[in-house]
Image (cartoon, rainbow, N blue to C red; front, side, top):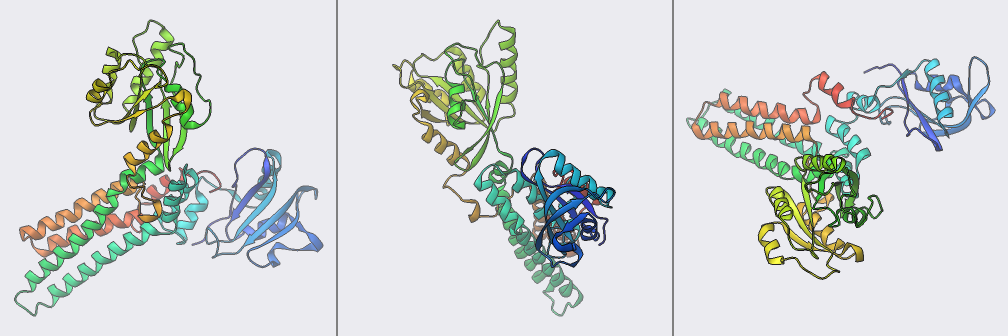
Length: 461
C-alpha cells in the first residue's frame, strides 16, 4: 500500500535537550536528503538502513544553515510504519524544531494527521488494531502496572488469544460443513450438535475469562475516579496531600477552606487514582462555599470509589450519618481521622453505619495509617496482588463492548444446540461471533471507525 510522505514533530512542544521531526513514506529519505548537508558531502540516499548521521539542515532557497542535527535513516519494512522513516534530531526549542518541520513540508512532505504514523503501521499490516490502540495506552499509562498491560497488548497478547478463538470457531464451522456434505452415518446430526456444543462452550468460557479482567483492566487504563468526602475540617485536604505526597491542597483549622473540587492523579500500589478532594458537604449561607458543596454532590454521582473521612475527636453528627447514606451502594472506605486527639466518636455506631465498608484509622497529622489505607484501596480492586504480567487484561471500552456482544452471540449458539435448532441456523450465530471477535483486532472493521480511533492519538504518533 502506497501513501504520500508525512512529517510531524514527534516530541512534546517546549524547551528541552532535543526535539524530533519524523518523516514516513516512500519519499522520506529523498526529502530529508534535499535538506541535509553531511560531513564530507555524505548523502542520506546512500547510507545504510538504521544508521544515524551528523550534519546540518540547509534552507534550499537561501543555502543558509537552519539547524545542526543528527539524522536517523530507517528503511522499510523494519520500521514502525513499515515504510521508509527518517527522524531528524534537532535542538529542543520551539523555533528550531518548527523551522525544521517547515522545511520538510516545503521540500515535499505533508503534515501528518493525529495518529497517522500508527494508522499507517496498522494499514501496512505491521500491527493489528488492538496493538495500535495499545500505543496510546502506553503513552497515557500512569503506573507501572498500567504500562505492563499496554506493553502486553502491544506485543500481541490479546491479539493472539483472539486469533486462537477465531481459528477455533473457523475449524468448527469447517468440520460442520464436512459432516453436512458427507453424511455417511445416520447419527451425523447428533455428532455435529455435540461437536458444536463442546466448541462453543470452550469459546464462551475463554470470552468470560477475558471479561472477568475488564473491570481491573479499565481501572488500569482510565484510572479510578476516587472522591474524598466528609464534613468540613475533618482532614480531607490533608488526606489528599498525604496520598499525593505533596502539599496540593490548603490545610487550615477554618471550616470551608476548600471551595472547589481539587483533582490530582496518584499511583497507589500500582492502581492509578483520579483523586478528587471535595468541598466539605454541609448546609452553609456562604454563596461561594454553597457552589462548592453542590459541585461536590455532583462528582459523587460519577465516582468509582468514595473515601469518607470522619473526625474521631468529635461525636457523630446528623451530617455524618447523611454521608453514610450517600456512600451506600458505592465501593467505599471509611477513614476515622485525628486519632492523635482524645476520642469522642462512637466507633460501634460507625461500624453499624459503615456496613460492608472497610474501616481505617489514621492520624494524618502524624502520618499514621496511610500505608493501611493504600493497601485497602489496592486489595479492593486487585486482591491477591495480581500482577499485570500474570494475565491478559482487557482494558479498552471498545474491546469490552465487542466481547460482550460475542458472548451473547456464542450463548445464542449454545441455546440453539440445546433446543435442537437446525445446524445451519446455529452456524449463523457462530459466524457472527467470529466476525465480532475480528472487529477487536481490525480484521473486520469499517474505515470510518479506523479514522475515528486514530484521530484520538497525539500529533506525531
